[in-house]
Image 1 (cartoon, helix red, strand yellow):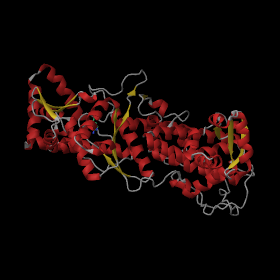
Image 2 (cartoon, protein in one colour):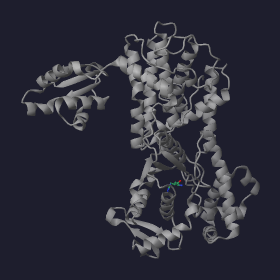
Image 3 (cartoon, protein in one colour):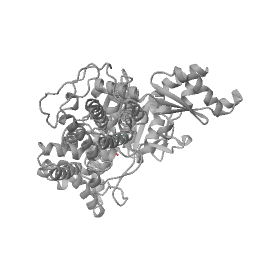
Image 4 (cartoon, protein in one colour):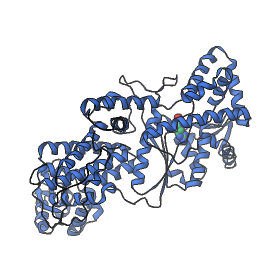
Length: 592
Ligand code: ARG
């Protein structure tokens, strides 16, 4: 609409469309219209005061406005433009009911590939809340890019290599128990790891033993490799359970171990390009001139590092996927690491390094503002957390709606949704407070509140004996099968043709507000994609739900004269909030 208005004004005033678009403002309050055109800059040119100019413009264009605009008004130095709300509402509803789960999508990304590296937990160090953030945010970004037509490749870059494996092997060989490992692989490996550190405090030889096991591993010792493989496979199996609960999958599980060998080639390559210096026996890339210090590439003892493997991984991924963008969804404490990585790729001549982005997130804090995950084994076990959320949701549902069918399944969807939303409502770069009880509440800015709004809207549609207004058709009585909690809203409207041959009533303010908010959805999707900010969609969904609930509170639907139109509007709301939540990775329920 803004573009349309800019085009129109530019033509009438012989200005550049882009310039006009840039200066058009959104007025601070509704009674000042939907858009405002400030006239200050014309004052000098026309040697008149801006107020006069605004008046002139209105006189000139009033009868020639594009049909989407109802009128223009001069107000001081501004020309205010009022949208034709009826037309806007009609068009929006028509569009949503036609596009349904595609509403807001596009194919702008057709032919382009986005690599999203996300989650990337470390074996034997449990899945921390930091990894949960990466998983949730990365998953949402993947969905947003797919929705806009991009091909998305999701990579889980497992921390499956490094000196910790020397420690694990040493510990396992000394006091490990096969049966325990089989029963709770991740917890048990973590336990071994923690125990190792405790015992190493008094037993100095343990560290040496670990170092030498890691060396064996690097050199391909069979026993070491076999143990490593088992640790890895058992851990992945466990991780996959968590991903299953979250309904997240990956295209690729190539972790750090995958790049151990090619990291050698990288060192040769950098050497040939004269980018490597020796420093006290270690190899470094000097990045001082970029303010990035010295990047350690190989340690004195010959061990290659996290950074070296990352260089190898980036190059391999580019060769494999020819990505247009590669997103690393990783905590912001690794900012320097990624700056160094991208800079090394750049000075080594990889032009695509510009297409790599570190999409960083902040920490999770507890109620007291303390960091939630720590190194000493005080780590959140993900599966337990998800179970706890589900249980809490179950208890609330049991109280609110004891007769509901499939309560277990519903509770899982609500519990998981609560955690996902609790994360995504925060601007990702900020630290966020993790408070399960608040996340799970059915009131306030929470996932369950949004799901509940959707369920409420669905129930209105179910209760009505009419079908949503098929604009251009005779209204019909709906005789359909009863709908289970898992039926989709789209099944409720068989709305096909939507020509307008029946004018709708004059809309009231609540209807207009809701329709306008719905109309905004596609532009929110665009903004979320551009800045990698799922929080924009989360906040939008919350505002949308609030506006819907306000509407429903104020405006009668069932048995009202405008029942059919309002059902159509509610239906459009259902599709929109469902799409928004789906992009966050949150499921909706017809009943809860
Ligand atoms: N496994 C790492 C960690 O938990 C995160 C990996 C981030 N990705 C990367 N390409 N370095 O800290």
